[in-house]
Length: 199
Image 1 (tube, rainbow, N blue to C red):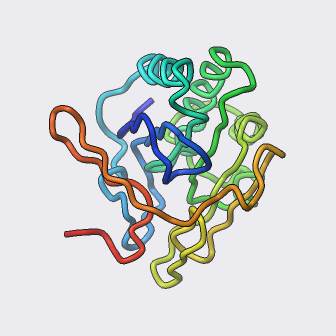
Image 2 (image 1 turned 90 degrees about the vertical axis):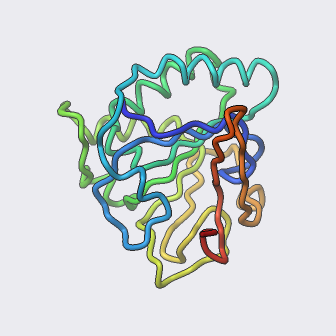
Image 3 (image 1 turned 135 degrees about the vertical axis):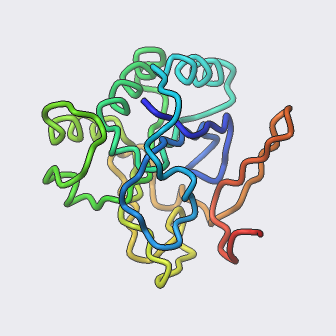
């Protein structure tokens, strides 16, 4: 799989404290996308073992409640995403919460109308398996002409789907922005800069 980034603990990407995994690669090309650096499907491939180890270590330490998958476009690496979810579930059965941001609508996913960079069979079946593990998903392409202040939605056309009974709509808080600075000085901006991205 190709990954773009990882934040160990975030409160901006779903309920509670969550690790965030950004996938690298997206062909949807939403105008004014906030993450254009994640669009090219290129970079160093990984089997995801480091992510699994980091997430499970955070979970065992009580630092996180779940994981949110973002990008890029996670569903364009659906097979790798499912493998990652299964490995995390094996390490922490039924306790970790999973959420996902995708530019595809639920109808597109259910009908298999999504592109994958991975040449593997049965994308619809893969999505159905992924869906059984997700507690929530934010779906729909970003539309810069429809700005939104709704929890986890940067444009009004996007929808927040609760796919299990784990969360209520009231568990999703107002949009926030987080800046994380790594020990090496690298900074990561995540969340929803409703006033625009700082220059």
